[in-house]
Each structure stands twice: as structure tokens, then as C-alpha cells.
Length: 627
Image (cartoon, rainbow, N blue to C red; front, side, top):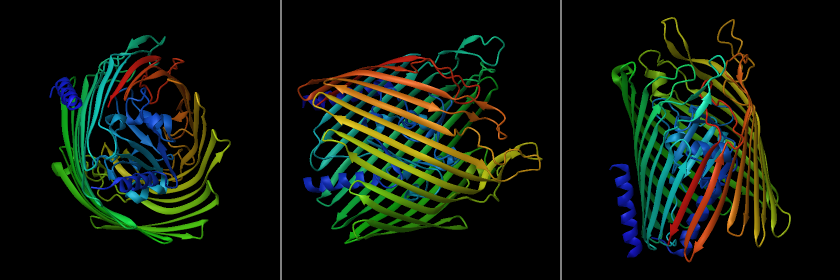
């Protein structure tokens, strides 16, 4: 009762701060199944250390530091979009428990709106590997998932962060229940002034200024209810609300803008799970409501938009001897309401059927054939896929993947009042991938993991907004883009009695070039796409000695061209972060304290041209778990 009272007291404090049925064996099977999904070929899972990294203020920072993803950020609290394998930001699907959260109006996902504290599992599915969740992920998909363990003890977790530039974040998580029912509540409140100093490269002499009009405030709630109806049947209900207010700072040459943006996001989800011998059946029904308010005080210009989505899928998985069968049916409805669209309101329906047949040949070979049939309005798409894997050792395998994918134009691309093009074709990609993975046990305490993939993708009907004869920009199918590259990961683990060490390196090389001329004087043919680095890597280290730990992270981003003819570019940059922490156990409870330094070397850089980024800054984090 004391713990329960503490829980409701904590909920009340945070709300005021805002201003506002299986047995034990079956549970283990569910956890193993979820883990297997995340470890499919061509995917990468962000571990618990990466998710708990106190220096990561949003999902974009987590992906940038612990995966092959390239995140294009406009600054702290500002929009952050992700690019996989040299594709555009609209070519990466963001998933929550298997449901897509990308905006139905512009097709992208703003990662700054998603705190890592709200997910237990974060994984990246690269290239063709994302097709099992739906079309559109020409570069891949980022998957967030919420999981439950009915055997877990009741727990309250409280987290407080204080950092430079007026940053503070208060978060809490409470989990209560028994072997049939479990409630998990998450709350967060974050704010920042973002008033850091920078040198203005647009002025003579590079004078120093402080960033203005960059306030950020975010609050959110995620409530999850899990109920076991009986031993083989479970229902999950999730309700997720986020409100994000931010001022949009100007570029270096234009500092006095007074623009604000407020995002309000409501997502509701009901998931029914039925388990049976050899398989399972999942039904997911989700509602998404995204509202955005923009206001330019200086120009007395404001706008509002609302995007509504209903997403439903039914998925079955059945294994029999050496065979595995998987099928999924999707039915989606989207509506966008904004004055900038023709008629002020548009909607569309999407239907899809996905089937997968998987066969083991002996103990070494595995072959998978899959196809997605998709209907959008009056258009039909057939997207086949082939996967083959060979296990050359107990802990090593090679794989080959070939398939097709497509990205249907966004509602803005089709129906924007000044520039939308209803005759646009879907972007279509042809994908090839060859990879291998190997785990080596060097000793009882030491292990090494290797994973490498080379890939090729050809994207036809690439959509681009270009100036038109009418005096405004319009959407056109202009480019054919070829993307080739290498993704390589190395992991080293040592576990001693008093000392443990974990090292991971993620490197990727990407060459994404335009193959098609838009006009006679087009100099972009054969050139790298803008804002796509050719080289990128991150190196992460954790050293733990008894109750103490030391985390270090190094990120390197090569030069990014800012013109399609590759004549001008932003120089490379490298960032170093470190965290020193201590874990104090007090009976069943746990207190964790840490001190972090971001951008240790005080690197001066721009992720987006003329957008200043902060120099060296600091953070203190307290995390308390009460059981």
C-alpha cells in the first residue's frame, strides 16, 4: 500500500507539473518471440545501455549514436529527421508496435517528438528488411515497441536531469500488477532555453551571439494496460499523449524571427494476442491524431493542420516442422485537414496483403519467399521479395536479400494547393543486399561480434520539388537515384568479476547519386545527394568497475554537400560525449547518479547550413528505482 500511495502521489505531482492470461512458461515464449523479431536479418537493436544514455534527449540522438542512421537535426529541440542508406527522410518509416507514425501529409517523422524513455525496445530494419511492416521504407524502418513481463515486480522509477542552457527533464515510470494484469504508466516533462553562444559565420569578423527565440517545452503521458484473458490470450491497450511547444530560432543571418510551433499528438492502440500450438495471431487497431499550430508573430502569419489516421492489421504466424508461414492484412485510412490543401481536406484508403513462406533445408540453409499486394486509391502494386541464408558455423551465417519496395506520394505532394501534382507516380525501388554475421567466443569472459552488409538500391520516379513556370515550387517525378554502400558493426565484450567492458563500432559508407538529368544544364548527374554523408561512424565504450561506470561516445560525420552539383559543402565534424556514473543499491531499491559532458572538445559545427549547434555542455542525472 505504501508503494501504491507513493505511485499516485508521484502521478499527482507530475500532472500538476504539466499543468494539467498466461502461465510462466507462456510468458517466456512471448519474450523470446519478440526478441527473435528484432534480430532478423539486416536489423540492428539498440540495447538498454543506449536507450538509457542520459545525453540522448530524443529518439534522433539515440539513433545517431548507436546505429547506422544519419539524423539531420536543426538544433536542440528543433526538428530531427532520419535517413537510412542514403535515402530521403520520407523514405524511413517510424513504427510503434508495428504501426506507422509518419505524417500522412508530408511523409516524414520528427524524431525530436519522441523521448527514448517511452520505449523498451528500439530497433532499425535496414532497406528491404522493413517491408514486413509495410511499404514506403525505401531506406528502412525504425521500430519502437512496448513490452510487458507479468512476472516483474512492482516498481516506480523516477528520473531527473539538469543541464546547460536551462535544460531540465523530469520523468517517471510506474509498473504495478500481478500474473494476469499489469499497468505501466510513463510521464515526462522537459524544457530548455537553448540560449547557447555561437560564432556567426555570416557576419564579417565572426562575432559571437546567443541563440534567441529557441525555448522548448515538452510534456507527455503513455499509459499501457496489459490483461491476460486466459492462458493463451492477452489484450494490450496503449494511450499516448504528447504536447511539444517550441520557438523556431532563425538562421545565423536572420536572428530576430519570432516563430513558434506547437505539436499535439494523441495515439491510441488496442492489440489482441492469441497464442496456439506452433503460432500466434495478432490484431492491432490504432488511432493517430496529429495537430500542428504554426505562428509567425513578426509577419502576423499563422496556420493550423490536423492529420487523422486509422490503422488496422491482422497478422498470423504459424510454424510446422521445417516450414513457417506468415500473413498480414492491413487496412488504413488517412485524412489531412489544412487550408494549404486543395479543398482544405483530403483523405485516402490503403489496403495490403503480405504473405511469407519460410523453409529450412537441413540445418544450414533457409529460404524465404514473400510478396506484398497493395491497393491505394486506383493503383495496385506487387512487391516480391527473396531471402536466402546459410549458417556456416554455430554462430555465423551469410544472407542474400532481393526485393522491390515503393513509396506512394504524400498528401502534400499530391494535393498541395500551390504546387501539388495529382499525376505523380509512386517512387519504386529495386533492392539487393549481401551480408554476414559472426559471434566468436574468445574465452569464457570475452566475446566478439561481427556484422557486415553491402547493398544496392535503385529508386525510380524520385519525387523532387522544383521551381515551375507558374512562379511557385511544384512536385515532380524527376530523378533516378542509385544508392550503394557498406554497413559494418563490431562488438567486443569482456565480463570479469569486478571489471566489465563493452565496445561497439558502427561504420557505414554510402554513395547516393542522381542518374537522371532534369534539364540540359543539370550538373547533378553522378553527384552525391545533398546532406548525405559518404562516411559515418560511431564508437561507444562502457567500462564498469563495481558500482562505477564510464561511458564514452565518438561520432564522426563526413562532409555533406549542400548543392546538387557538389560545388559547396559543410565540413566534417566529430563529437565526443562522456558520462561518469555510480549505481548504489539499497536493498531492493537502486539509485543511479551520473555526470555527463556533451561535445567534450567544444567542436564548432553545423548539421544544417547556417544553423548553429551548441558547444561543450553538461548534464547531471538522477535515476531512482523503488521496488
